Length: 514
Image (tube, rainbow, N blue to C red):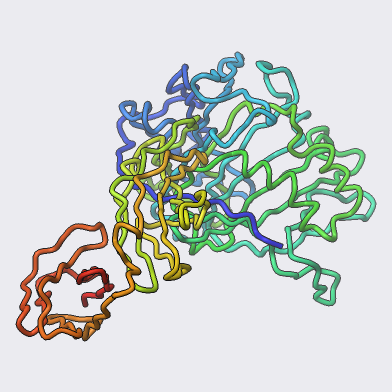
């Protein structure tokens, strides 16, 4: 089976989050966009203060920093300090999201690739043996009316995206308890087939959800959790028996995505398909429940929260030292609706040899944009005047080499940029091999040595002296170097390390400078 692959690109950010301290459990940052901070730890025996920068709300949304102190021990979840976008409740009043500002509430059937989640969490001083935490996003789905408060008991479909965490996850299936009077949560991980370890456990390779970020692949395991609480359990537990909880878990905590800027739709789509494709051992009852609950078109997305699940631990009491805590935060957390195509790719140029054609272009001016972020480039080609067809996509740098040409054809190319909402730019300028006369019958072959080269490049041709030699960088800019036509050599000792192109008559030769 092919893995579902999503493409992203890296952006950078710096900021400050320490100007204002939260003094209540729910703090509304922006009533229009419904940016909210929740700190259910600020009134603990040893408070865990949460701070934010009010001057950055418009760009960074529900960003915060919290210094977590585990003041009372125990083994359960201590709290979920977080930011939220969309609907919230405060003072007994429910406030629905403002769709024009945050894209919610929205039904699943109307959620498209234009709706993205942007999140960048960070942690400091979290290496202690008893520092237990998870950085996660929780998407709140509800089957009630558009602007009504979700009823917890009726929320039967959960989607969680987990980034960093304090330790490795075992990635094993947890069996269903069948003894009378017992029950609880049990789960299955999506895998490629079935391999029995001898004890009835499925240890087949995981089938991950792959996300490619500027050429680097990051993987999430996909886990489906169900519940089987027996009669007599409290009502909150019994309500979970109809729930399907799907979590995306970072497969390698040493290779976690540095940030998320991604369409919610693709995560939802995975939850709707993976259980039927990659859960060969899923019992019929659980498959039927997933069919009835997961990703239904009429479910509403009413809010999305991002933050940290922090866990009590009996051995992790900081003893009241205000300087002994772990710092958890997020540089930004917001949702955007992006329908804007990227800026047209500029300055596409072509450098051709007898066998390959190299294309180079300028980096997109949208590369650092807040909303329009480049995911990849696409190259289109026309052969001998025919219609343009997609030659290659998933290109993460501003260059491409076409190895599939032949000397009997002329080629034309253009490039487009694709952003993270799958909006595609208009085509760039068109470049052609015809204008270069690359494949003329009297093509004269030149050889260069050494290549790679550090100082002096020598050119060997059929003539005693070459009248004109030109050197270009990968962006097509002509480079000024010392040329000696009397012995056919070129001094490139002052150039930076990289790739250059030497043009002599109709021939272009790739040069590697050490």
